[in-house]
Length: 353
Image 1 (cartoon, rainbow, N blue to C red):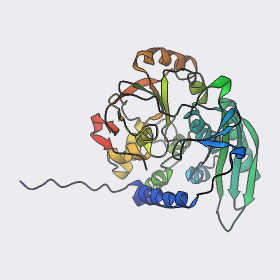
Image 2: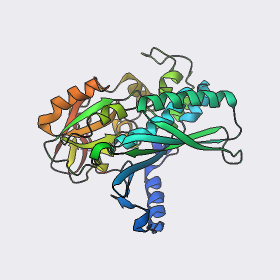
Image 3: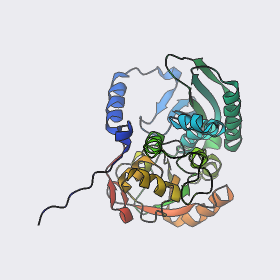
Image 4: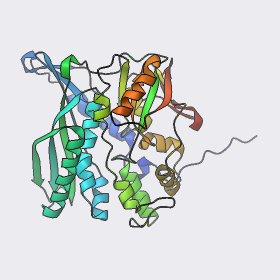
């Protein structure tokens, strides 16, 4: 019998211009060159690179620091003519990474690179940042606006966020994860701010009308894709002190593979993953994307995962519901082994890159 042919997808993140392997190689080379370590009087770094936020011990206080951008979602905002959503994303993409180590957000500074200041766009971005700060309980301390027409053609948005651990809370870094733990997932608002380079390429290739709803959608597809990153910090802050919480994961770039960042010597089995929301099925149909590409490029409908002791899962779900996530649900378990599996889709991921 002749071997079956493996279908080559028409599109992937790499074909759209973002090759994860090249990114990982370039970053590894950069980090190899950063050898300097500050003296102990300047603070003591905790943990290694690769987690969601960096931790620094300053005397008796531990702080968390993270930075991220909205990425090419700003180009969709430009095409649609709406900027508030990406302003809120500046907050969401950063404070969610603080939540993924159990930190409470304290402050944010924003970064705007632009070809020329647009007062109308800046006002809308400011409204979005304000909305995100209110949801996260976080203050804006300042930031940087650089007019650099030789570098950018339009607007680029990002930020840096500082978090802390109140009342003696310990960082939640995944060391307590063990076989038998259960995985609780909190749904996303949509694609958030990841995989947008691929999405935009598919929109162009199919001449999609951003002002019309997709099939099965209720609002224009441009508006649906712009929905801001869901901010999970109030929910996670309500449970991060509990010893039964063993790990926290923000499913951003890298999709379900992000779970390996918590602990690489266990196996995360996502055997209760909910059906893909209609938006993700529609994106997959645009580019003939296989399940593997969808689950490693997008959040696939779940934006945050909490790893908990099995006997505490029901109680923690109730606590999460009271703290803003009534839609949290069980999505899987931890077992012996390594990697991440989505059995219903036949997917296996060895690690995170």
